[in-house]
Image 1 (tube, rainbow, N blue to C red):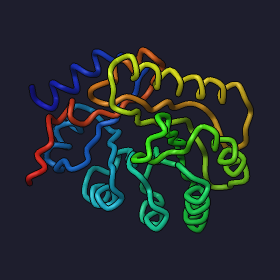
Image 2 (image 1 turned 120 degrees about the vertical axis):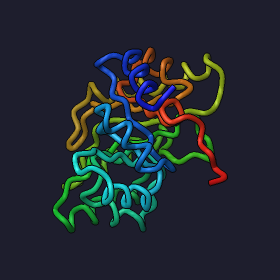
Image 3 (image 1 turned 45 degrees about the horizontal axis):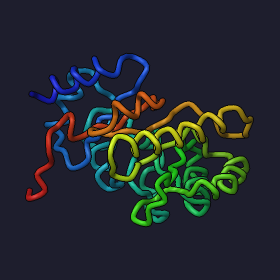
Image 4 (image 1 turned 90 degrees about the vertical axis):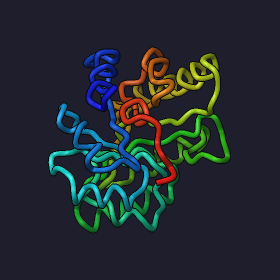
Length: 220
């Protein structure tokens, strides 16, 4: 199936209440053009350098999402270029985003990335450190938290559901509370192989790359 056909199929499956992020990391501008032509405007990148390049060389009406790990020394490069940063994972990173976006008088819309599977190989904040991060977000002038993002451990359907459900519980709990600079609007969870389960468990944003563009050829 073509890129356009894949997108059409996914959009029919997920309905109107779930946002599809086209994960365009490592993809060419030509491939992305096919997704753009069918109406997609939300593209997600993993690396700052690639996001900056594409933001400068692709259509100007695209919303760019940074879904990969953000290092503090790279924050300055994405000021004014991202619609949403999905990977706020520490107080240190929060303070750098506040500083760099503040210098340009720009607002950074972010999601808190939770390391729900407590995996050492993955970034994201642990559940017990969430409160400290939230207190720091409330002191900010240039950072607005819009929800939560997770990348769950690889596993079977049962474990996938468990992690998605756990995340949704945190999301719902935070939604009942009033915070400064924090609203729970976006629950970004689920990728090519598990987005259907993620939606069943409450995701309203999914991140799909392989399911749109096919398997990556890393030899290129």
